Structure formats: C-alpha cells, structure tokens
Image 1 (tube, rainbow, N blue to C red):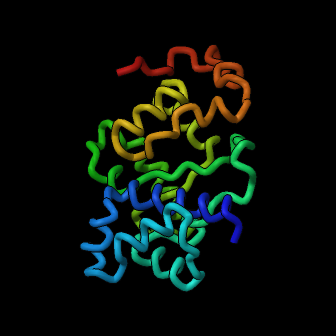
Image 2: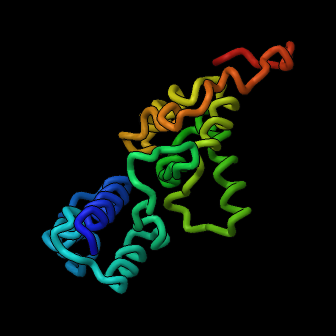
Length: 186
C-alpha cells in the first residue's frame, strides 16, 4: 500500500471517528478493548497497514459502510462538485424540527431511495448541498457553516461548493420566477 494511500485511508478513519465524537481512548473503551487506541492511531497516521478484514471490522464497529472508510481514488487536488459530503444523522436527529426539518426530510428521502437505514451517516453530493441551500434560503457556504455549527457536518468542509469551480448559485436560479411565493427569511 502506498504511503499516500495509507495516509488518505488514515485520514478517512480519523474523520469517521471524530464525526462520531470518539477519542482514540474512547474507541478502545467503547469496543471493550477490541480496538486498542495505539493500533487505531497507527492506522490513522498511516504508520501501520490495515488488512481488508480489519477495515471491514472497523466499519462494523463504526456502523458505516466500508466504502465510507476508503479514500477517494481521485487526487486530492481535484476537488469537484461531485465530492461526497458526509452528514452525521445522529446529530441531525437531535436538532429541533423547526431548524433541521427540511434537511431531515431530504436525508430521509435519500435513505429510502438507497434502502440505507444505517442511521449514523449519509453521503450526499455537493450538488445536493446547493439544493438544500435554496430550501434554506441561504448561500451554500452559509448552509455549510450552519451544518458545521449543528454538528451535522465535519469542520473543514467550508468552501467545498466554491472549491468545485461551479458558477455562483445565483446564476443558476432565476429568483424573479418565485414572485410573491418566496417566503421571508426567519
């Protein structure tokens, strides 16, 4: 396994662990010693190779599909609007419905379409974030900040839409078509 790939895999492992609010010691405690903090840490740093079997077992422990632990095969410098955005559904479920209702309904619909009822995380496309921004009547960057604030999105996702090189959202939406039907912001 190449060093770059090991590091990228480790970064994904760390991101999933952090998203679940676990420290390395927390992983060891939650797994009742099955996953030693020093071993998981060495996987995350890319210092130790992880077998497919162990990766599969880690995915089960974290409650995520194995594919969520694998790094994106594309070079990291090629950020596009098709990047995956991973939502923390447990955090989403703890938010008041008046704030997170539209996002919760959106996530629920995607889960139903995919027959994915894992319930912990959900991957969406950056394009989905643009659609949600329209629903929330804010820019994608504002929505990203709000989702990070809510704990639904991992920190570090700021600017993912603008990094994709897409045109501004305002150029894609003809607000004059909304007329008086557009709701005032809360």
